[in-house]
Length: 404
Image 1 (cartoon, rainbow, N blue to C red):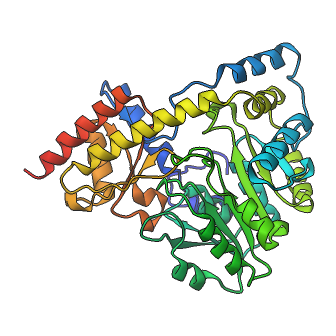
Image 2 (cartoon, rainbow, N blue to C red):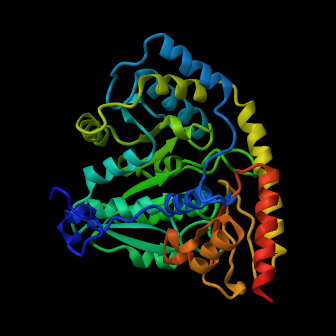
Image 3 (spheres, rainbow, N blue to C red):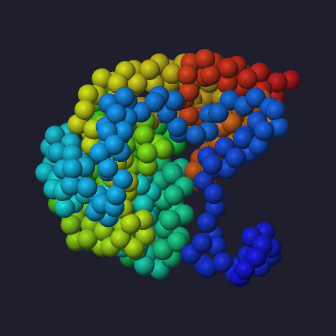
């Protein structure tokens, strides 16, 4: 296949595992926006979930000290003992559930943990239930394993699965269900009662695993942490088929450090460890030192950031609700607004495309997260107030112009 043209009609020559893969919407829009910037157009970026806060200074210093101390070598493929212990201790303290280092697997971001758990558990013909709208990796990575993604709509307030639709989605082929709270893209936060309903349903299906993506768990505006399925699993006897994913990117502003982790039963952790051995080798040693500093160090910076995010959320949602034909619920967590734009007379794809081309504002259509996102757009409000105001001024002019 030397010189294979990826645009040619014969693209079916790609292996089935990757033939159906599509780009993540955020990266695709970022690429389009960057191209326009190179052409001289000024773009306001609302498409990427990239915190505009720097990594906390004590975390940076820990990473630098680790570099100077020679922490630039290979280490345990599934993570250093120091970071595993810090994660286990943090989960034990915040979730009141005993977690051992043997249950912790560390990787370069959360996606490897999700993918390797899939690889270890899914077979062709298995079905994976996931939220719709939901993070695109859930369905794309399932397809790579040969499993079938099964989208399930959310309830009207976008906090969790619609209970009736979820119950109907389970079949004899169901192997896993993905839970994501706080949600990307909606910002909805599932309650303990909603997680318990999922657990009671899963208990009826003894071969089903629960994968809980909790990367935004510390970004909750009512205070405290979002409820964790790990706590629910402990209370319902599901620990032996529950995997929880988390990481340092969002709460600790460490997106570029590439550091995530998963908590899983030790037998599964052993299989995932082997996948780490034969793929990534290991996560960067010095990055893990910085991660341990993030988990065990001062948290006043996180509290201040969350206070600022709350102010940004309220400003963005207020401005969006003032736009003709636009309605926006106030998200309880994460840092995304998910307004309904059907009243504009445009589809969400048309709205996002024209907002970029005509207003210079990069946003994502809701359908980038599944058919359930139709009629919505996603706005990441991690930018400064000044940038948010500029972008929303442009969107206001754009929407008002549609009505003329």
